[in-house]
Length: 508
Ligand code: SF4
Image (cartoon, rainbow, N blue to C red; front, top):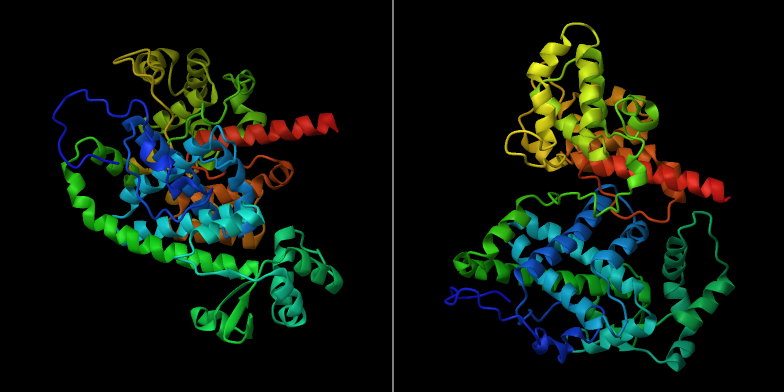
């Protein structure tokens, strides 16, 4: 996949035509799911290398965030489905099968290069990839699950029992594993008061459950938990528990392979094209820029943004805490220091405030208590605001700061309000702010403070978003991109949810 020696001919293009020749006809792409045991061998472009890695990373970041918020697997699956469709689809569409499987295959191996470097990164990667594997396995049809297992018969010597054997042993299978299957079905339903009768359960097991049998010494944990039926030296394992066995196998393989990748990584030091990309990706696990184009920014969402509306709660209720803290400080003190002006100014630019409206807004705020005259504002501050919009100096069209950029700036000193409140506020002030945002349940507050104490500031912010948008989220079909890693993502998500809610009320 990557060059082992320095390129000798500038401009060589090896990837035109027949690019995935070597993998197309092998068992590598024979199934929607993979243990990723064969590394890719054909060439891809640098652009594909980077884009595929970033898109898979987005999915893994979402999983990481869901796990940090203690979401059960079923909820993670709900959040992930639209993301998978967008970034890592694995359909059975014959026109796209190879392309999709190839992207999945390569992106996994690219991220191995990124995350093999330290124990901590390896653990994160293994954890998140295993969850992704479990979710994808659960999304397969039963016959696809069986085909997948059969294709790994060397690694997974699993024997599915026949329907006759199942019916013969039915009573014993039911007594040994009925309760586990029942609990799984209840969990799957996602309904807390879901009940299932014994007759319904038996019917379900007879019709749908695919048991495998394995020599009992292969599953010591299940034996010691008394979770499975043992007969003639074999353990009979229901589908629910098979997924855990598969996940363990997946994890063990990945752990071993990541260490091997790490050992071969020094050879990559020669590669002047890939190293910067890999370093950049591993630099910060959650440092993936939010791009409003990525989120489907809608012109109708910015048409009502102006100097006046941003001071009203109909708009600023959608701000994340960093932005509302800055704007509150600006309003109270009629001033913001440089870093604060940059952070808030670019955030406002990102939500759709035009340069003319921005000048009106800042001029009003700075001059309203009389301590700064309009003349002084024009002389000392106007340039700075025009500069943010690329109208002065080097004329760079500056982007709003994402959370990682905000974390990378110097912490706010006395009289400053920039930064991330989850990191920079003392606990008491933070709790007051949470309460002002309507989070009053002590359990909820403790959850946020717990994330803060673990320095998971974006997770704390995402949790606050969920708590303050509970009702809208419950009615929303699309939970894509829930992890907040950009103040403007928070704003856009909040407005889109409100709009979705208003639309469904009108439709009803
Ligand atoms: Fe703002 Fe990001 Fe901190 Fe949330 S996590 S308050 S969006 S800087």
